[in-house]
Image (cartoon, rainbow, N blue to C red; front, side):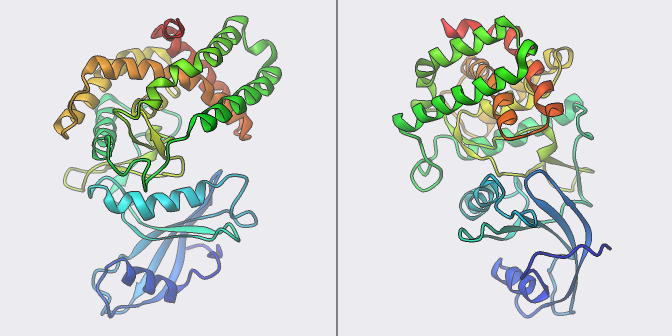
Length: 354
């Protein structure tokens, strides 16, 4: 156990009420809560809680995961916490079971910026594929791809997209995004100096020039879904042994509506060096597409997936620029920059610019 203080209001009485609201059997109560483990991340603080409850609390979990805003800056410079709360309030309840950790409570306060999620603890039954930053083996990569395909398929061209779940930006919103991207890139390029070659600078210039035309794929709102937005392999829990459930996708603070291959390009082109990516990329895209079809997606053939993937890899060259602007350390954005540009070269993404 640790002596780490819980956020205000998170106590035995609150947990009892939250668990009852979530549908667990009534009559039980949590007597005491203790922090077994606690650690901060870039955007949040994670607590693993141990619950002691009375005998009438059959079905109550013995441990829970509490994810909350960082002490002293609960909202932080970003609003990812409240965005993830919205995911668990709106998207998760309508998602097929088995793809996400169960959420027992999700709340945010706009005025104070505080927020929290009370989630199923999968520590004992699940694992991450590798320690960061090591890549997965092929079997784990395929398991992660199948989980992402099942989630994407569940929301593929769903009638709620852009209605009461997420939003489609209008022309002014997309132009605003592009202008902001240009400004962030200018600061990024200035700091990178000679680390950003003339050829790569020219590629960014051509991408910004072609952006209105390339954006037609997004504006079609066809063959679109809910994407994770931070779909690296360490945001997926895999069962430790057979029979302990399926892969579970977590950390949904960057979700949005987009082309599904944004997640696939982020997973592979951003994070993997060429030798392994070249071996795994095709088989994993095959696995993903097969699972999409098995889940009922129609009218989206393997060639369409490949072209969307190439376009997503091209757009992903902007990811290190955003990461730099957010203050993410160079250890992350610099390596991402190198890997994604090598992927764009391998896939001849420059040809998409005309």
